[in-house]
Length: 416
Image (cartoon, one colour):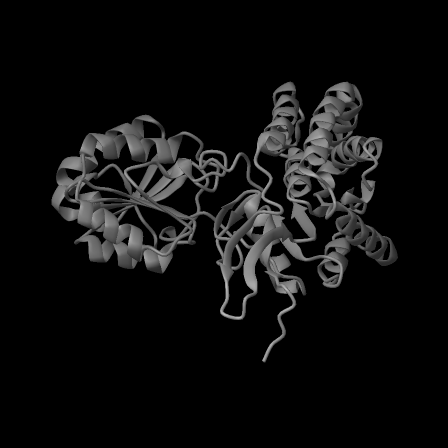
């Protein structure tokens, strides 16, 4: 097992070197051909996906897990459209910026380049295989993918189709590889290959991400959980606030940018909470409130200490009445996961203060936390969301899969 994974990583490193010479036209052409290949090989992919689904049903996987595992017509079309969308995005590689002339006469600038080899460790969703491969390819990186055992047949089938499209364009198929080993020890081997893998991106539950971060010798982009807050200021448009809270909590409660904690300024709590509480309860949301919240909404449950800072990922919302903006900011600093926070306010100074002082990777004014997404931000697609500050922070698109090197033009200058 160890030798096989090392060999795959070495091949990925060699493929990454070859990709440095790829033109934008070549990248776009192969991405479009990949979309066509997925459509052409749809029956083969779905047969392999059915093997995973049958095994999952036999193991007693939940309906939600089986749904994430299913490559339905909708998911297949989404993957194909995603490849076409990435092909249409501007290519960041080779961009030169900040060119300045120095007193010595040399010209110094920065050129955007690929990171090299990306290691991706993820669970459940086989569509991640295609999404991640597309972004890494466009950014000029090779990718080594290790999906969950529950999706092994689906992931290998998708990789086979993508590799055939690469080979047809005379691009090294090792630029996209799926590790065919389901033993979890494969992850440990992968995490020790710092000479061949430049960055590890884990996607999945908090347990997986913490395991990767604790065991990797390679830099890791982490996103443990999404504990997103909304603060309703005393100047807020309360009708707007209700819409933002409802959208953040109920549109898709099981995703990382869903709203988990609502903070309400005490000056508007008695007016706002009955209105928003009625809408939340009508939508089936379980409200867990502080004592002041329960005094206004007696039908809500008492919040436990560990409800603050908790990612529920279901129709549960923690609600707290706070004295003022200082208290709201203090609460967010103590309990946030540096994912996404929003303020609802009509006060410009408060809005600017919130943007300036809240340290999360995405900070919003008068908008739902559900907008915290690479596609919604105009990145075209995202490979994940980083809640650590090196080297990317927030949703990661093509530029976040690159770095910059210094370039120098001279005319024979030597240093005195």
